[in-house]
Image 1 (spheres, rainbow, N blue to C red):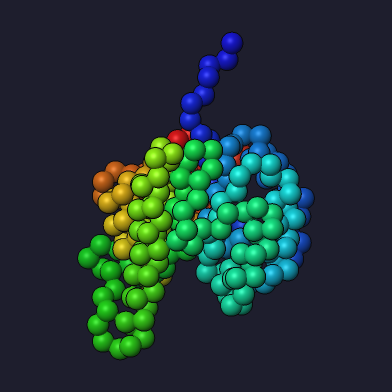
Image 2 (cartoon, helix red, strand yellow):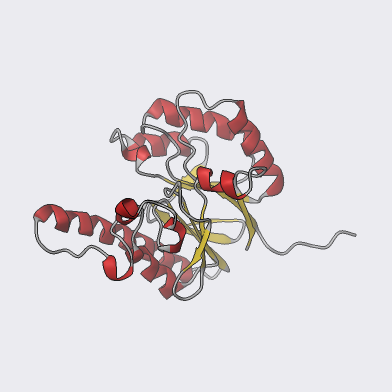
Length: 246
């Protein structure tokens, strides 16, 4: 008799950048994920230019995926200012789009949001000076608050035994290592890591940093995985998605 598995297998991938025609490769990818995982996380930049017809292409490819799918949007998904339409298109395919609202699947709680830039550690941009700088910082703070709200609500639910966080922007510096130093402040923000460490999580997944590093940890040791498609292809070309049992 095979050994009974008590964990939940999470597959995660980001930065698909789907145009108007996803191609058969994407459908095959989602078919394979269905066979190997219990839940799929999509970590933003699902579309290339944030157009509804590109979201339609993503939704069509997801017809091959027969497991629960949770997602966050990325900066490319916001490019055309039509992210609400993109959310609606994905919802029609039963994708749970996270934006500060917690969700549950297979007994795992999922908290997520897009995130934003701002830098890391002692180099985090501070709300001082011009109004534009203050607005930039406020956007990062607002995203961290959305994540905090979702985590707090999941912690109060007795049916949730494990929590997984999904982001587009990075919450730690380690997973953007390898990127040009000039753009690192625009790839993530350590304001996102504070609620994660405060409430706890089994793992964190993000995308966005195409030339970053696959793994890092929060200050309290929670594993963080950069699942941007270019990173995954370099790390293991035969499996262009992360797979983790929690």
